[in-house]
Length: 336
Image (cartoon, rainbow, N blue to C red; front, side):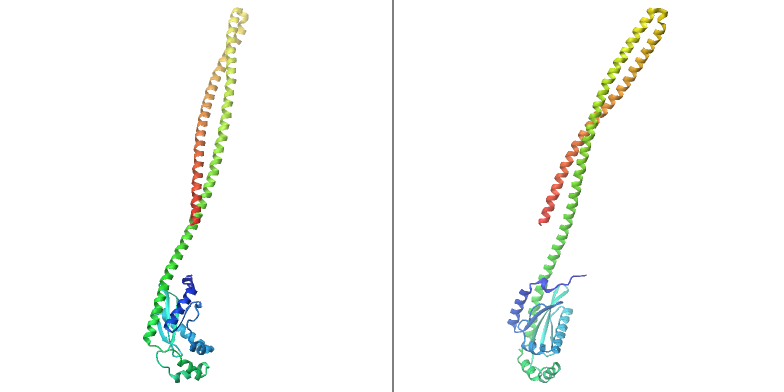
């Protein structure tokens, strides 16, 4: 639903009152401003006949209100000043106040005569609203009489003022709408920055956790490397034992030959010992080859982890800088 515009939204009421007071005094007429909410200003240069006689009774006030509504509606439809004769025979005018094609208020003015009043009609009007005819006629004859051209000129002057108010009001409302749109835009941008900042902070935490995980893996790799190194010493010991067994078997074979038939069984055992030593040496070489591959893989993992950890730290620095820039931009928008 479109918001209703009041005159007070466009111009300060006190300023409007001062201008209408000056206008009414200079042209010698009555004037006041109304909008959809009712009277906006007090009546400037009030007419004694209208104030004391016509609006002194409920029926008179009702007729005056009907005349005001009729004039305001006519001015609204045409978008131009409407000059009319009220129920008491006075000439009045209604000047529309427009912003583009929207009617936001009306100046009601006049309350003068453009010719001598019809006394007979005046007495009848007085009786209809319950006022003493003699007082009614006496007060009516004191109303100022001017030419119709004078009324037209006064209405046109007030119409020009109404146009100025409309033009100013249009710019003011446009500026207010632009400010509102900018405020909405700033709010949306600020919210976007807030979300980006939150995501950035979360990203920093995730990257830090990833960096910590890399450190833990690297430490485990170091432990594995040390374990493999310990395995090397064990294999070297086994290799030495196998070598000794080979020598022992060889020596045993020599002694078995010297013993002749008595050493035949011992020679078989010596040969088995040599074969076992050779098989052990072969298995040890295979294990050493595997362990060397494992050590190589661990070294590669450590290098990769070190490189990845360094990149992670660089990303943390970059995200921190981005987050700081976002927060700075958000603060500047907030200040604007």
